[in-house]
Image (cartoon, rainbow, N blue to C red; front, side, top):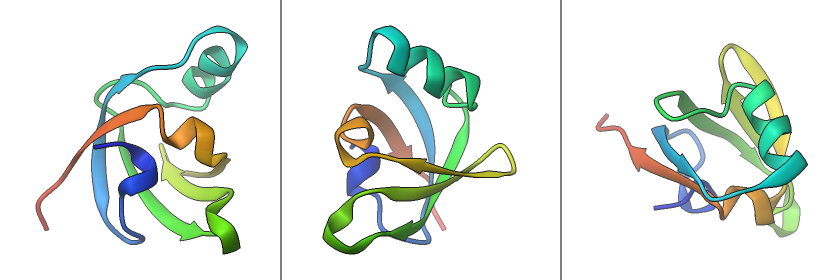
Length: 76
């Protein structure tokens, strides 16, 4: 499952990032690392961008980036 598929208000754990280069470095600096817990706070109209809660911060992530962040949804 990828981050763009996670429903608003649900929680997940990052398993892998299929991203390279400066985008990968930016996401890592924001806390997007394997094992980090994330949740979708809001999906903007037309699904871009997503507001993601991670490491106590709210981060906007583009849909094309969210499609390459592999997650595992957590049970409620």
